[in-house]
Length: 589
Image 1 (cartoon, one colour):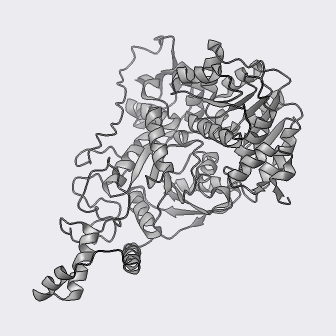
Image 2 (cartoon, rainbow, N blue to C red):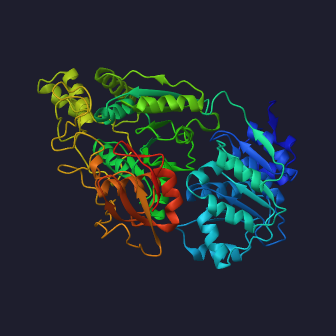
Image 3 (cartoon, one colour):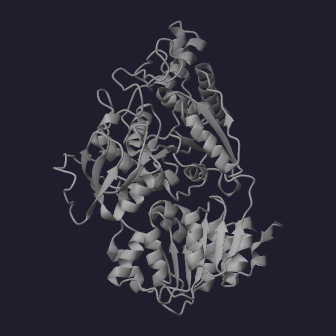
C-alpha cells in the first residue's frame, strides 16, 4: 500500500490540526485503509496487530460523526479493560481538541458512579466503556442509547476471550438497528466471525497483511532454562543489556507477587499489576510506570490488557502463556509505532511444545538465545560504571577533593589503590563490601517500597552455589514458592488474604443465589488442595478474591462455588488451563 498523508483521507480541518499537533505526518496502513471507509458510514471489520495505530483509525471518524449540537450519546466504544477504556478516551480528547462541543466520557468498574453520572448529565456524545459498567448504566436508566449512530468494539477478540459475549450481545441489541458497527481485533476467531455475521451489515474487510501475526519490529528470542534458574537468568539479561523499562508477564497473581518481592530485594525498581488490586492502586502503578518511575512492571495477562506505554524496551514471558493469542498481545506491548523492541521467553521441559504452537500460530521463527555467563554480566556492569565515570569526568561537574586525596597519599596509599577503593565503595555502598556481591549501578531509580540494603544479593558468578539458588541466607531458592523465612517485608503493599475454604456438606448442597457451583474433573488423587484450585481461578481470571467461595474436594473431581456473573470468564480460562500440570475440564454443576 502506498503511504498516505492525513489530508488525503477526507478528515476535517479541525481533526487535521489536532493530528498535526500530536506530531503525526503519515497515516499508518490501518489508518489509511479504515478512515475513508468509516467516514462513508459503512460497517468495518479491521484486523491488524497491536500497536498499529488502530485507535486513531476509529477515533477520528467517530469524532467526525458527532453532532455537537445534540447533547446525547451518539458514539459507543466498548473496550475489554478499564485501562484501555481510559487510554482510548484520552486519545479521543486529544483528537477532538479543536472540535468545539464534542465531549467524551470513560465509564468503567472501580470508579465512582457519581462522576460518571455527572458526565452523562452534561451530555457526553462519545462514551468509552467496559461492557459490565455500560450494562449497569443501561439497567439503571442513566445511559440511553436510542441516539447512537456508531458502535465500535475495540479488541473484540479479547472481550470475547474474557467472557463478555452475552454482555456485548445485550448492548448491541439495545442500540438502533441502523447504526454503523465497527469491529477491531488482532485475531479473528470463530466467535468474532459469528458476531460479525449477526450484527454487521455487509462490512468492509480492512486487513493489514503482515508476514507474521506478531509485530515485525520486535526481536523474539527464547531461552531454554530450568524453572529454578529463571530469576537468575532474568537479572543477568537485565544487567547485560541494561534494560530500563520493561514488562514481565506471569501466569498467576502469586507468581507476580513473589517475583516483585525478589526483584525489589535485589535492587531493581519493580511493581505489580494484577486483579487483586483496587483501581486506585492500579492507576498509581500505571502512572508511575508511564513516568518511568519504575523499571519493570510485573503483571498477569488480564490486568495488563490494553497497556499502551511508549518506549517499553523489552517484554519478558517469565511464564510462557497458555494461549498463542496471549503471546501476540504480550509482545505487542513493545516495538510500538515502528520502534524496535525485544521479546524474551523462558521455557523449560514440556513448554517447548507450547513454544512450537506459538511459532505455528504466529507464522514466525523464534530464535534460541545463549544464556550469558557470569563473566559477561560482570563485564557489562563494569562497562556501565566506566561510562558513568567517563561522562562525569568529561562534564567536569564534580567537586574536587584534592585535600582528601593528598592525605591518603601521605599515609602511603597509592593512587590506584585509592581509586579502586572508591569504585568498590560505589558498587557495594558505604557500609563496606560484601565480598563478591555486585549491585545495580547507583543511578537506578529507587522506590520507597523497597527495603534499603547495603548491597545487592549476588546473582552471578557464585563458585559455591548452584544456579538458581539465592545467595541470601534464608531466602527461598525459587520464585514460584510462597516466601517464608527471610523474605523482605512488604507492608506497604499487603497481599490480600485468600478466602478460607471448608468442605461442603454434600454434592447436592444449593449455593446462595449470587453463587454458581462448578464441576471440575480434577481431584485429591492428583495432588490438589483447595488452595490450588482457588489460586488457579484467581490467577487465570484476575478476579477479586471474593469471587471464589467454598471448594468441595473429592478424590477424582471437585465442586467450587464462584460468583455467578463471573462464570463465563472462569469457564473460558479454566478449560484451557492446567492446575499443577493437570488439564482441567470445567462446567456448571
